[in-house]
View 1 (cartoon, rainbow, N blue to C red):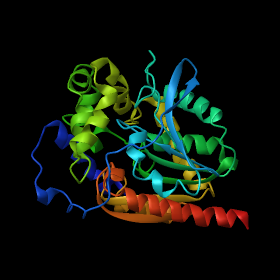
View 2 (cartoon, helix red, strand yellow):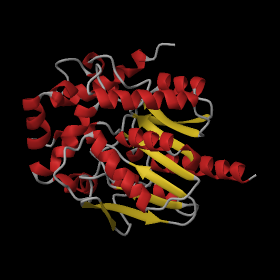
View 3 (cartoon, rainbow, N blue to C red):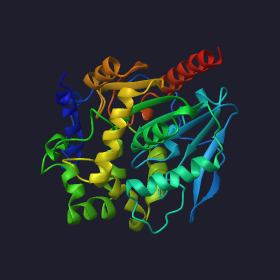
View 4 (cartoon, rainbow, N blue to C red):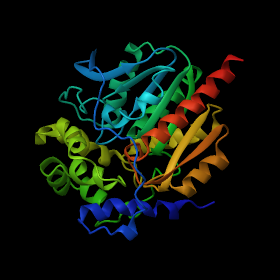
Length: 333
């Protein structure tokens, strides 16, 4: 089965770089009114991790539910999802190092750096067994990586818009908009600095452009807050350069490939939440997962692009809560 044509929706990203006008015909219909709040009604907590403090929020009791975000977001992305699970588990949402309210040490911010900090953070959380991972974007790579190394402690993995096979690794930049596209520019030493460090394009254009509804000004300000100064934007520049495209970088290509093989082999329960057209995990990719993974359920969210938590938080929260409830009940039998 060929799934590459489904990845053509990634060209949505390259349209943003050129500031191409977007007509209503190019996007799916806007979802109906939902209870989506800009508020982040959680107490901030911090823990010492290596040389820095990492920010996280924690609510509820019971088996752990760990939420992992990607670029350029933070635990804020999960604010309207977590309430649907808080009465049935210990919900923990962390800001990756250098992102959100976590400190910004002088490191390279490559994938291996994020994994090192996250591993220590998760160890300090003393998660116990029956851990549920809820993951997105680069958080999906970090989450699947951790799950594959701690399989006996993982109850299940719920994922959406994941940077894993068959979406990645990609054979060439052509699948990401071509040499003149957004991600090619991000990987260029000069253009990348200008777009992300100087203009903050990932926060100002890519993020809102990959959501069907319009973010409120309060939501935009919340996403801007960690990256007010140009120097603070380094993580958002490094993440697109870590994407495994055409075999580069070698180490992330190896990691993502290994995750794909593990996903095909493992019996670990999974829940895939997807939208249409999606940016990475559209219908064809969802079909691939359903047909090839051993223990997976699939939930269709409706119209969406990449940051589906901003369009369908209630659907995501309820779907994960219901799946997890049935999952833990089965494990207790």
